[in-house]
Image 1 (cartoon, one colour):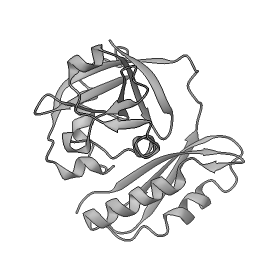
Image 2 (cartoon, one colour; image 1 turned 120 degrees about the vertical axis):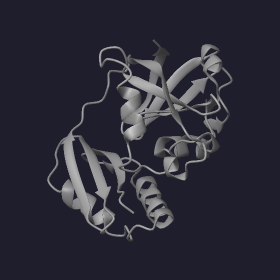
Image 3 (cartoon, helix red, strand yellow; image 1 turned 180 degrees about the vertical axis):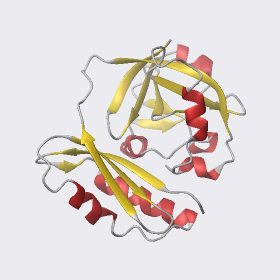
Image 4 (cartoon, one colour; image 1 turned 90 degrees about the horizontal axis):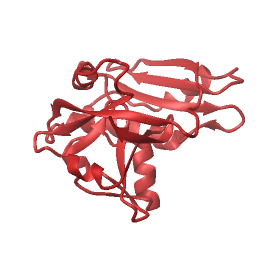
Length: 206
C-alpha cells in the first residue's frame, strides 16, 4: 500500500512527550489494520529525535510502507489562552464508509481540497461533513460541541473521521460522548476544535 502513517506530538522539556502512549498505540493499531510494518521502533526514533531539546517542540513522526521511520521537529509555541479560531464549513465531503479516515495517513487530498475552498485569511480551520450532511472533523482537528450539559459532544467514528488522540482521551475520561452532529447543532452551543498538539481551542463559525 502506497501510504504512510503520521503522528504529530508535542514535546515539553522536563515532562517529555504529551500523550506518548496514546500516540504509539494508535500508530500500532493503524499499522496492523493497514498491513504496514511493525512500529515497535517508533518510541526509540522519537527519543533520538529530541535527544538534546531544551525547548517545546512540535514533533512529526512518519512510518512508511517499507518500515522507514522519519522524525522531524520544529519549535512549538502554544496559542494564547483567549484564542478563538474562525471556522468555515467545506463543501468537500467525506465518505462515512471509508475506513482510511479513521487512521492518520499521508492521504490528505480531501483535507487539502477543503482548505483550498477559503483564502488563508478567512478561516483558521475548515470543518468537513459526510455524504449524509453530518459534521465530521476539521482538516487538522477533532470537533466538539459544548451544549451546556457539562459533557462535550463529538461526532462518532461511524460518521467518517479520524480517531484523534485528544478525542480518545476525552471520551475515555467521560468529558465527551459521541453524538451525531449536524450544522444546525453548532448554533446551539459553543464550538471547540482540538488535537493532541494544541489541546482544545475555542472556535466560532465565521
